[in-house]
Image (cartoon, rainbow, N blue to C red; front, side, top):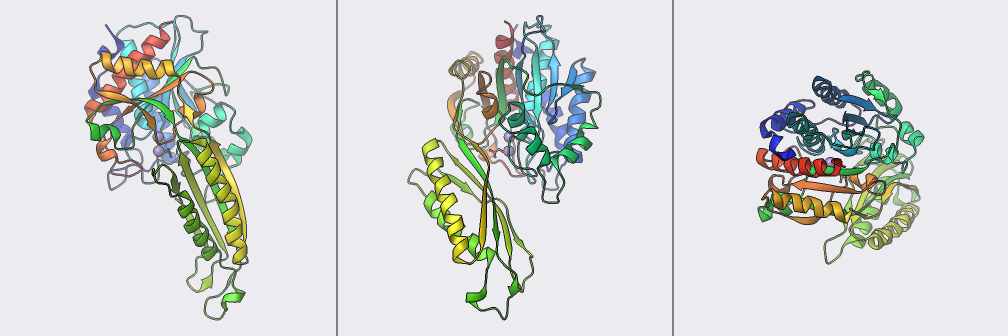
Length: 414
Ligand code: GLV
Ligand code: MN
Ligand code: MN
């Protein structure tokens, strides 16, 4: 019998729907941002399911939460899977949580099948993958592997001035039964399951993507400082209008990002103007840039444009700019043997699919330099994600869990 024979679609789907209630929105999506009470409840629920099944639970200094099924040789590094439980503010029911629960379904399938593995198998819920409340994205996995310093992650504040340290203390207090685990403990191999978040699989009528790479991503926090002035009396020459400086810079950067192949992704997802009074010239703008491209050289070209264009546009309007790159992750190629394994297992299971790159970022990008890593994509309805309408089919999420089960069982057999 294969591990996938013990994957139960209904159990996985019921767990997904139970998690979707934590932070459920009126439009059918989920708002469960990192280190909120809802995130804490999701972590608590996962820990409850784990202990009910006899698995031990661990958490580290950044709150990454691990569920472990021991191996025959329990001193060996684990074969690990997982993803994240936090969502976008207008997120869906599958982005992130699917990878955690598909992994948990595999642990249960191994238990049900009485399948012993040589390596332990672990499921991890990485802290704050979305970066929506606290920048940057993939904070938990970045800190785990030492790419992001723990201290600066803990000092990060949200728009209300709450620190990661304070929010984390409140959330980890909800899982006091989780044993302490050091950051960066070795991993034998890592495979993350996720919805594709794009249209490729669904358009082709295919079920499984064996992910070959993740494109590069740079994230920026920009501050433009001008000066408040009366909207009715202040002539042009006397204004230091932070909004006009920001808008001009953004329009120029959008032009610089235009390419024939439509490969560059340039997004200003947050734009806050202050003091936010209709009849005062705005003195401060704070905005973000999310930049992605499959080619590191192109990201570096745009990075230079950002560093030059924003201060230029600020100066022109007698403003001052601060440009901070909060994270820069080059293209992540996945281990060829794992890409091949995912693709072979999906063929063995008779599932249509392909090898494909990822447009979205994932925690796997930080784990890949540390351990052989790969990813499994399943389709999402109409390719929609980061949207409350995000949806997926029960048979597709179960198919992804089956591929994950056979891959992990094979990697952990020793
Ligand atoms: C992950 O949510 C990403 O922004 O790619
Ligand atoms: Mn995700
Ligand atoms: Mn996401």
